[in-house]
Image (cartoon, rainbow, N blue to C red; front, top):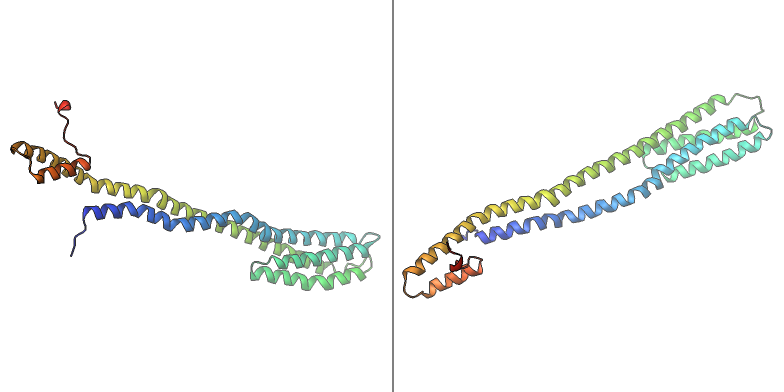
Amino acid sequence: MNRLTIITKLRFAAALAPALLLLAAPLVALSLYGFGALPAAMYENQYAAIRAAEGMEAALYKMDWGRTQPDSSQIVFDQGRRLAGLIDSARIHVQGREQAERIQKIADAAAPLIDAMRKASPGDDSFEPRLRDLQGLVSDLIGTDDALLMGVSSAAASRARTMMVVMLIAGVLAPWACFAWMMGLTSPILRGLREIRHRTENLAERVNQSPEDISAIDRTLTALGFAKPNPMLAE
């Protein structure tokens, strides 16, 4: 079995950091793309759902106020139509079963209540408990929407922390670890080559004519950066 040479180890150490960066690059790219699209997604879904729920709450308060006005029937009709539109808008941005169930409860309770308010006389308060219950359902929906928004924010923060760790490992720790490894691998090579150059010079001085083997070693050492010492610089 062939043993791993020092050259093989050096090549492996040199390729390790780029390989890790290559593996991490798609993950980093996808995460950056996801972070770039996150504000639009939050506005399109969670924030739009919250605005729809808050609009429902405002419509219910206007209906309660409007029934004491001279044109109460028209105010209740307009706000009821607005409430129905906001319910449909909220359904478009549903992100979970709990959210969908709360919206359905609001829709089931809103239709008969609006019809009763339009037909009621100005002093009729018999539907007040139902109106308060519906307002409570809308408040619960707002709370659910807020929780979903916080969940998205927490997930984004968690993903950011994960990417920080990936970038720290792939971009900082791995290259420096490979550098330290290569320093360890090359230190004995450096010492060995210096020793070979020294021994070669001593051997060349002991023979009258430099054999071909010594000349070949000399050329190899020179190519590796260990040229003959300059006599002008000798001490």
